Every structure is written in C-alpha cells, then in structure tokens.
Amino acid sequence: MDLRARLSTLSPLGGGGRGEGKADHLCPGGEGQGEGSRLSLTRRYLSGSLHGRITLSDAASVPGDSLALLSLDPRLADVDPTRLLFVDTETTGLHGGAGTLPFLIGLGWFEGGDLHVEQLFLPRPGQEVPLLQQLADRLARASLMVTFNGKCFDWPLLRTRLVMNRLPVPDAPAHLDLLHCARRLFKRRLPTTRLQDLERHVLGFHRLGDIDGALIPAAYFDYLRRGATAVIRQVLEHNALDVVTMAAVLAELSRRVELTHDDDTAEDCLSLAEVSARAGHLERAEALALLAAERASAEAPCTTASSRSRADPTGRRPISQGALTLPPLPREPVKRTALDAWWLAARLAGKRRDWAAVAHRLNTALGLPGLGQEDVQALHLALSRVCEHRLKDRPRALVHARSGAAAEPPAAHARRVARLSRHLEPQHPFRLE
Image (cartoon, rainbow, N blue to C red; front, side):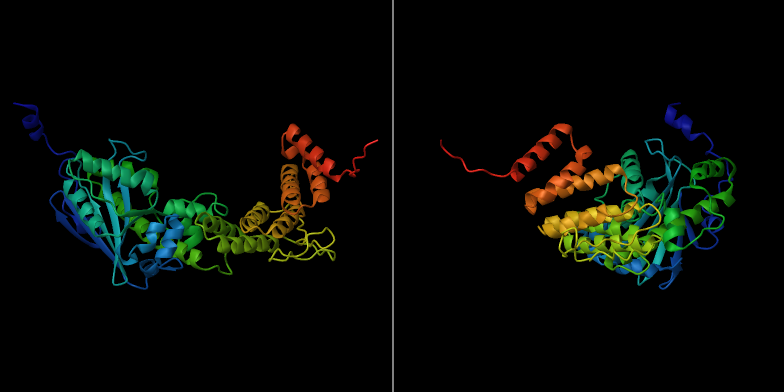
C-alpha cells in the first residue's frame, strides 16, 4: 500500500466532535451554511448602524481624494468606494510563514449602505481550496482591499496559501493598510495604534468579553482536538468586530483628513500637517502646522505676560527683536508638539521662499520656555543660516552663530564665525604709497 492510500485510512483529526457543517451552531447570531469543507457565516449591519460614535455607512462614501491622502498614493483617488473589500484573518500562528494556516477569513463590503460581513471558517486543515476560491472571487469584484497590517501579514500569508494549494494568485486590487494610516495620524497622541486601541480611544467603542488575540491559535487547536465550539464562537465574534472596526476607522480617518474640527488635538493637527506635506498639499500643511502650534500653546497652562502676546499666525510681522511677539509662557516645559509644529511651519514657509516668515517662526520657537540646550542650539544655527544667506542680515546671523556653536562641528562653526566677522569688519580703501 502506498503512502497516499495509507493516509486515506487515517481518521480525521479531532474525531467527530468538530462541528463540521454546523454554521448556525457556531454563529447563532448570523446566517450560516456549510459547503463541503467550508463554513460560510454572514452578518449584516444596516445603513445607519453605529460603531462607537461612527456611522458605518460613512465608509461607503469616502472620497477618493481622502483615500489618496491617507495612503500617500495618488492612484487611489480613482477608486470606487462602494466596492471596498475589508479583509481580516485569524491564523494558527502570529508570525506568518509556510506553516501558518488562516482558518478564518473575515470579509466585509457594502451593498446599498448596509455592511455585509462574511466569515469563511475552515473546520479542519488540509481543505482550504473552497475557502481560498471564495476569497479570490470576492477580490475580483473589489476596487480596493482594506486591511489592518495586511501588507505585512494577511495578504502575504493568503498569497502563500494560494501558491501552496496550487491555485492562481489573483491580481489583487489596490491595497489600503489602515495600520500605516493610523500611525501617521495618531502616533503623537496614542502610545500604540493597535486596532483595539483605536476602537477605544478614537471610535469610543469598548469590547466586552473579547478573546485576546494571542489566545486565538490555541482556541482553534482546542476546537480541532475536542470540538470546543464555545471558544470558537468568541473567535468568530472577535473577527467580525475587527472587520466592522476597520470600516469605522476608515470612516473616521476620512473625516479627519477632509476637515479640521474643534475637537482635534494639537498632536493630531501636526500629524495631519506632516501627512499633507508628504502628499504635496503644502498650503494645507502649512495652515495645519500653524493651527497645531496655536493649539499646543493654548492647551498648556499659561501665565499672563503683559510684554508678550500670541504669535501672528500669518508669520509676516517684522522680524526685529523689538517687534517679535511670542506665545504666552506655559508654567510647565513646552510640549514637543509646539516645537515640532513651529519647525514644520518654518520649513514650509521656506518652500515658498518667504524668508521673513521662516525667521519669525524660528524666533517664536526659540522663545518657547523649557527648551533643551540641543533644541536651542539647533534653532540658533537655523536662524544664523537664514539671516546670512536669505535675509542678508549678517549682524544677527553672527549673534545666532555664536549662540549655536554646539549644533555643528567645531571646524564648520569656526569658518562660519570667521566669515561673518570678516564681512562686518570696516573696509579700508587700498592706497598705493
């Protein structure tokens, strides 16, 4: 008897308690049907349904320009938002690789404003083909695949399983990874940007009784060994919530990049300014950087200083020391956000060659209290360069150069000071005796 025949005589893994074909038993809250070696479970969230503070159907009308800005990919501007496909997997391992098996694939799409969630569950290993074929069919109909960390994990894993099962790898649609988008917008405010962290802190939704993602592989193995369906129902609920949360996160990210809102923090405004600058929207980036600087100053506890007032947001006031105005002095060390916002605003003013605005913004940053010596030195060096090469104000350039000695190598600093000093020495006419 050859090896293939001997293997065919072995009992299926886990005995008869696995619950094959019992989709309704696994997911009593949704519709289920068994198809051979695959269970398909479906749920529908009606138009107008909320997830936290977010209306889910808003994700079906995200403008293409917002998608392009979020992804920093101008090709996504032409994507049809009604044909988005949200993809999330649950697997037997958390690190990928050829031995990792995706036993549950959650898919989400919109029809008439309703969010449909389909979950493809694998009751036992070795029969992935129907599941992968259904995934390929959904991808063929989508205009954009939306994932969370899918560029690094989900899609490479699914592509590997297609190859290992000798199935053609479909031409995947454009791919939007919400993890990268969330990191760009919330990295300054949130310590981590895991999907559940965004759900709590951005969407205002708190899961109750959710299974820890690290326990999901063990839960599936327990299902295979003992037919434990109770814990698999938790995994199914976890996966469905992940798909719904991705739709809500996309709607919220789009709302934030379209307009600024009163509840946007200084950190969020600055992050959005950086994203806009990377996308080439320089005018909007500059306005957001100034707004971030203003809000960072307003959010800090302030003392009254009669000799100081808010900085002019246009950055076009005279740059002499007497005319310079600074933000109110916080009692605590300045937030890093305020300093970074003024740096960005200065760089963006330099791109449009408004050197007076550059000097004004750097001076404003220099007046922030609580700066470290490294920041002070860097600002003085930048002001020295602007005053010397752009404003031709060599006396001020020399003052700033001497104050920023530690920001550049000693030899470069010595040459800068010598050059400026030479220009400021009295010039005597050459006379022949």
